[in-house]
Amino acid sequence: MRRRWPALWAMLAAVPAQAQSPADQSSDQDVLPRSVIEAWRPPTLTITRYTEDWSALADPAKRTGRWTAPFKYIPLGEADRWLSSGLELRARVESGQGQTASYWRAMPHADLHWGRLRAFVQGLANTAGGVAGGPAPVDRTGIDLLQAFVDYTVPLGTQASLRLEGGRQLVSLGSERLVGTRYGPNTPQPFDGTRALLDAGPYTASVFYLVPVVAGPRRLDDRRSRQKALWGLYATRWLGAGQKARIDAYAMAYHDRAASLQQAGLAGGTGEERRTTLGLRAAGQAGRLYWDGEAMVQRGHLAGRAIRAWSVALRAGRRFPALPMQPDLSVHADLASGDRAPGDGRVQGFNPLFPKGKYFGELSPFGPRNLIDVHPALVLSPLAGVKLGLSAMAYWRHSRGDGIYDVPGRQLHAADAGQGRFLGKQVEAVLSWQATPELTLTTSASHFVPGAFLVQAGAARPIDLFAGEAVFRF
Figure (cartoon, rainbow, N blue to C red):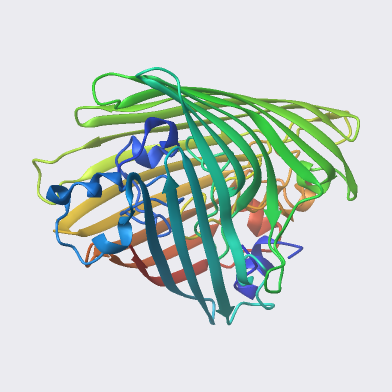
């Protein structure tokens, strides 16, 4: 996101569900319990919205009488012709380091089903105020088209289908460590492109070609990038009854015609980047236990230098439903490689491509580049509809030969800003209340204490962030 608090970035930087088909179950939210409360991720419905399936409301016996039902299923004559609609309204206030910023967002959508053909459109209107240095397009892009695509489903026997998609849409792959919706910031990250999604019983696969959409500062000026593109294959094997476990394998090719060399820990300027990512993920739950492990390897070239990068992410937890407040205890760990020596002709810094926006919680001071993170968390349910999440984070540089970066990939401090490896520690509390099926209220408080590297770099001031958010969605 755009720089929020002058003290924050002066310290860190020298430079500024509904029912779905398995093929659409791309987020870890669909398989695993929410062991960490993420205020940006609503607990009801879905983020992409087009994965929601309201066709069951064609049967009057399945209508509950909820006031939203007439908007979710509007018959258009034939049984396979219907329209669904919805709206999200979000208001968010953030305060810290003597600054207060506000963010407002509206995202209406319409979903037309006409036999095997479907057309989906979603608009975006947002604004922001009080942002340090003025709001960037990721904070305020005005009125724009967020999603607009069509798809056509081809039956392949009794238990298989192929869906062909084309247009602009939000895309979430797996854990969103590499391709996410950037839902937390005020302007999400859509892509222009095409996808073919195969659903064959326990197997699903997606072949895609995607070009990121770049948000502009004015109305109706969001345009597809002329610089970046991503294509590849993402496949999943669902395991067990109820599909409570999965194994994902994927291969992605990324092309950036003018990649920032500074993001790779090199001297300033740009160069062509071609990077291939191979990944394997295993996630699921068994009884009260759940897990999520992912390993990624990257190869390719950046400005004539060979890329040799990697990342590993682990998550494991256990629920205790019989205890008071039903505690959910988990631990997370992330490792992302950094460059060892900028002059050795190799690029060893990991590139997370298009990750989720708030990677390590409400206050994410670093992005997953040249980073080691350990993250224990506890979620309690003190009342019906109320969740309290408590978490702690500790951060280190993976390599002393590389600097540190924010989530979008901007370098905050170069490698020679200090000799230390420890970056800091953080605590965070998030309280969420599902007031009604449509309204979620969330408040959070975060505190970050700089470690040796930042102190040596002259950025020793702690960071505090307080936030309140209201989301109305149907």
